Image (cartoon, rainbow, N blue to C red; front, top):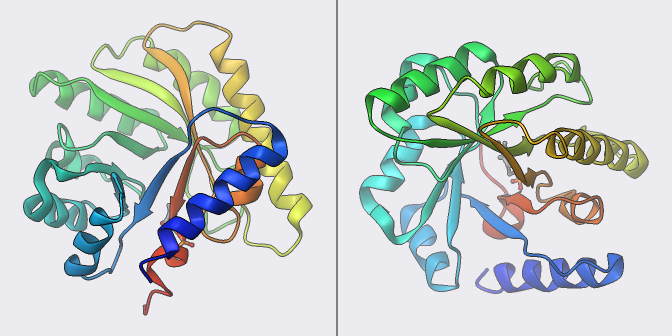
Length: 226
Ligand SMILES: *Cc1c(COP(=O)(O)O)cnc(C)c1O
């Protein structure tokens, strides 16, 4: 188990070489359901950032690990839980509506915080996937310009749950194109630094297509039992 992190870093380096990339990749260790002692062990291996998809779980990690690590909320966020996470996350990856954006902005203002977010987009439009449709992204980005306590730092998406690598690649490529289209416009409160895509089964494809944040759970910690 202890070498899984190193193995993934090696695979990432190989992939970067293959496509001629030299920029940095941030690996988020997705720790959902992982025993806290195992998480601590992985921090010794060099993990710097962890991701949880539930607010309550993120807060539990925060209580124990404090500022030893950076926190990423990667799952759906309900408006009534925003105050609990503002100030505790490096990035909220799962901002998927203008309503949620407005709430994060308002509460960040009340808490004297600037909150860094990603816009989650659902490119494959699979039924069970969260995220905005591509058509909703324009209005969202426009709204961000009025939200001075929020910084939009990029996009997050999930690859479709299919075998066909080309379908997965296609989704990642579209996400990259959308990110670049927003980037060149120099919107207020927007700096498209990050493209968060790629999980245990598709992170290499994601990196080939431009991801600079990958969110990896089972390939690090083993299969989740839930
Ligand atoms: C669980 C989860 C991951 C990690 O998935 P693995 O397949 O275990 O690597 C990544 N992103 C999100 C949003 C998740 O919920």
